[in-house]
Length: 350
Image (cartoon, rainbow, N blue to C red; front, side, top):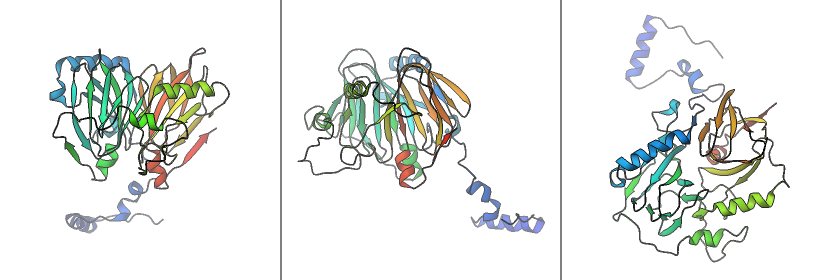
């Protein structure tokens, strides 16, 4: 590549004139536009749930659901404050709802899911289907589907919100709409989609629609736990992520949503993972256990219900620091988008 021309006074004037015409000289921007490797905009971050929980309860006490519409603490990456993203293309937040509260029905272009952290007795209504929540459940809300939440139990209900709105907003394709009613009227039996689809490889043959997002409203923790128990110690799993299972769309066998892949991984006692890096940005939630994740030589010590971020092309490895108990991590990433664009790359670090 030829060297960038050295400007003189007259050249500077020309560049100013071009700038006024909204024109740029490519040779002045090549290194920024075509970096040797992905820029480290998103930073590795760890959020301690035990520290966040008191703030959730405080706002639940002082801020009504009507005022907030959604009472959520956003987990914002320090390197991406301008987009409110948790990592490139993805967002995470922790939401709380109290007994008797009804969260206003709305819909948006962004795909969303909820991973239930604690509580019982609440449900979300998605496209007319009431889907009940229990800790460890994964609930899907594909883009542009009406959804609202109601808590008919006791005690606070909290969950992890995962959305792809940073990606949708970056493409200037976002829409949002409030429902004309606070809550939807149920249109089908409760938890129908899970009852129809959570049967291994047996899918209802009478349903003709094949959606890009999974038709399953809830992947229950009971089924996830049953899968881990069945596999038990018969599989060695991945040297990187342990015994890792992917939530899949029963129509395609692929990710649950076209923009987000969701996985659950079991790290056996004493697990020390191999190091890897890849171009899929990832958010991890600790379902249970204690351990350490090393991201670009930075150690993050995590415990129950914590959240942490592994940015694109960051080297990471997981360690279960317990010698007696499993650690279980829920992970979601923008891998489907990266792969669809032919941009996925990974390296095992030796």
